[in-house]
Amino acid sequence: MRIILLFLLLLSFGVYSQDSLAVEKIVEEQDSIKPHSIKKALLLSAVIPGAGQIYNHLAMPKGQKKAFWKVPLIYAGLGVTGYYLIKNQRLQKELRTEYQNRLDLLPTDQKWSPYDDQGILTLYNQHLTRRDLFIMGVGLVYLFQLADAGVEAHFVSFDVSEDLTFNLDPVMMDFRTAGFRISLNFR
Image 1 (cartoon, rainbow, N blue to C red):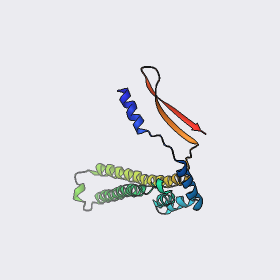
Image 2 (image 1 turned 60 degrees about the vertical axis):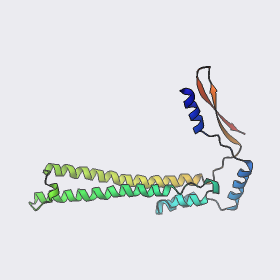
Image 3 (image 1 turned 30 degrees about the horizontal axis):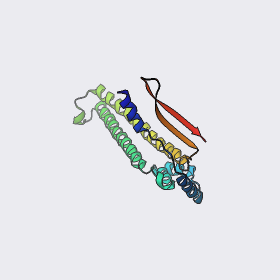
Image 4 (image 1 turned 180 degrees about the vertical axis):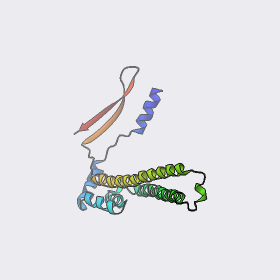
């Protein structure tokens, strides 16, 4: 069983190396274009969520483009949290109106008739709390996409040359225990 797990783990890791020609080509491409602006990526992402990710995607070398798929996730996160924020806001307003109508002896909505006054107050507080949590959720999704644009902007011109190698090799520690040997070489 350990050998199978060791084999599967080895398959999941890959040893990555780049051709010297590919590295030279990437360096030439980076020298021929203007430097990538991290501030611009952050500003774009702050003004329009997801715009920084698209800016980073367009600036990446041809074989490494991967930032565009995050934009639908950003808008899905903002959409879901925004939907539930609005839904809970409407419900808490409706419950507040229902409670006020009951105090003023005005006609009430039939959908709230199974609840007594204390039940209406409990539901009101519950939806008020949920609304506040979804406000924080919208803020967290927004800040997360902003941080992602900034971090990815740093990696647009990140170069892994042949001077850095990472090797993961299977070894037998003794005759019964399998293990891994990790070696980092800085040439």
